[in-house]
Image 1: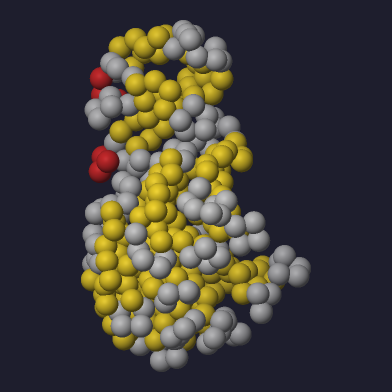
Image 2: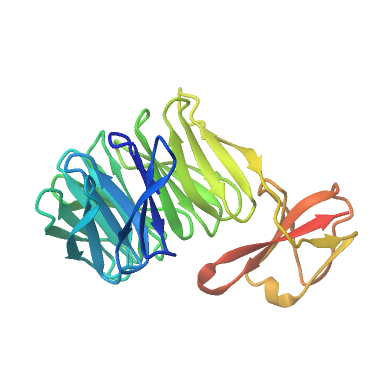
Length: 320
């Protein structure tokens, strides 16, 4: 979903209609459906040329829409699975992270042509633009890294290591920092926008899935999918002093009720699993068989479970 402030419209990628729903910002009514012919995913808006871009589950193509008329004006061939898009207002370019071909494709905003392809890490998942230094950041999920690119030349500047399976990026334009969320180890890595160094790694909740930046209060919000929480990172100034706090909790359904002893099969414990508090903190290392949890306060906890490709799930338990 994204907003066009000038046109007072909201665009929603709709898998159910294989298109984009257009919502009027004043009436909150759906005014049009832009047919794409396939399931959309990532969206990006170019206010300079008044165009909307749709990638995602569209094979190896990108749909370009004329915003005033809602008409599809071009279909551009890019790499397989265009998962994430962003626009650079300095050079009027759109960047497309193509997960299956390990590239970022560069689209000219005027001509709609592919003008460059940039090799990055394995399975690029998300791209974000740094307006202060004109740099592009690409989170590579399979190589646990972020590729930093000079947006003026399309040259790779540096690749930095981050947490396991990076999947979301946000840019803090006030203090010139980039935040990278990594799903599998529940961390957010803070990268300097000026010198590309890793400033700090902050532990958040379970499976951070999305980031949002609040410039008014200078906050980064982290949506932790499996712990049903939102972590708030604040930079207090005078140095790197990000702090994580839980701001929102929502209950899951179908929890396991535990009274004193938590019994686990061996299949859940390779690699090691943990008992996590409601805010995602590790409170106990778990082993196969019975685990004494009687000393912990009653309430909601989570047990980490490991799946394929280093994925981590969280099972909700209630201690009584």
